[in-house]
Image (tube, rainbow, N blue to C red; front, side, top):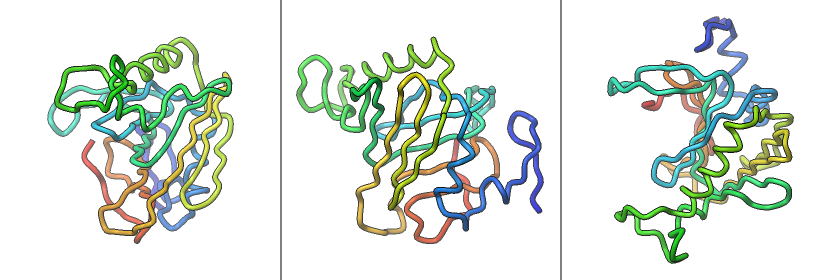
Length: 193
């Protein structure tokens, strides 16, 4: 049994929480009841943190805040609030002023930046927690939050190459296993934080 301490000091069984041989439907259930922290992005990858936030020093020596769990999305996804899409994966691709294709080299604001700022204001103002994790098939799932907010994740890539990654779920800043979808072979690896 791999007993350890969670990043915030709570004991947990790593094998139980992140058994790489369990279906993703089981792995994601650990998120139920946890708070969603403000979201962000690295290029066109959405990152999310859940649970108690804490300060760490990353591998570059920079101080950062991370959650108990993290999710990185590189497939289609969308946040829906009160029946309206408020932030989606295609928002990365459009300039907020012109509506034209977003120029990644420019200093302009993308639709993602504007809409994620609005969502983050809501997340800062309200303690929004996950009420239900609803998994369907082929890596797709919904995180249903209180306050009528839902995140839908929809992997659409059919290839299964070594470097394809629709989403990654992990404990940030630790030598804990990462659950990567699609599973070519479930990985026991750690990605840089």
